[in-house]
Length: 411
Image (cartoon, rainbow, N blue to C red; front, side):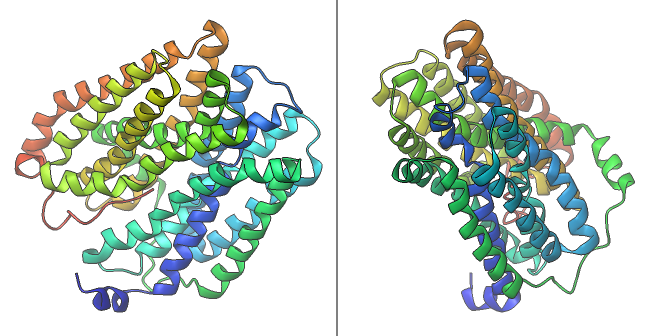
């Protein structure tokens, strides 16, 4: 690929703005994940309550994504992104200065979902500037902002320990959000070729199709599994292995790195061996890893298992969206929003499964076995449907068509 040609084909400041907005927003979105093991010193919580606290931002992001998606179509991605950043400051200020109870913290958690909804504005801002042959690269650069998760798991608990107060972390998070707002305002620019706003009937037409729901299921397991685990693993390491908050978050960071940086590899391998074959392999790996984790082996072993499992989930994200553009070439914008929202819902239910079953049974084993079973169900569903897919819309051998191989949405 000609780098100069890519740079000339779009708008680099907007691409950078999209990445920065996405990266900082993702950091804020998962902020409660590592902090909850420190927050519970002030607000004692059982396993179900801790799971609920880290799951609510994901649920909020899934719901608010639909709102920001609509606004992106109506007022443009730049104004929508600016609005999203301003609203994101509200729960941060609240958590910094005004939270006085666990119930208030639940409200803050839901409002943090605005940061997670940044997908809906950040990705169109980048995508609409670039021609089809560069969509994969542009979306990959913008979507690399999910690495913001690493900043939350690596620094949140360290800062809380340093300042002796978890509230301060919310206040400090305002700094990168404010800087991002300024840079976003100065650098971002809406593409002159904005598509017409989508109609509700357009969504209805897509939702009537079976494959839409199939991709929603698949992505709710891969992306939902990644973001759900990213938010919950600090609790797991702290509760199951007695790690202090900083070490528990560090172990989580190792696993999150696998899910974040192996995502593009999944899309690339899917291009090489076929999306169907790749997904069946990855869901099989995730099922085996989660079943192995359910035995709750020593810390060193479980860290390796989780690293491989998160790597599989991350690669699965790329593989799912290697197939989506082939099936929905004309409706890619609509289907990306729907499937992305489904991924958020999956991320909401995963901590609930682990936390509620830990509360009711006293063990994490049933929760991980259920997640393993869900991954196996995905293998079976793909196996059943692959025949009709290959006959109707997918390329020979399950490989991507040449004109779609580069299109990999990262939401």
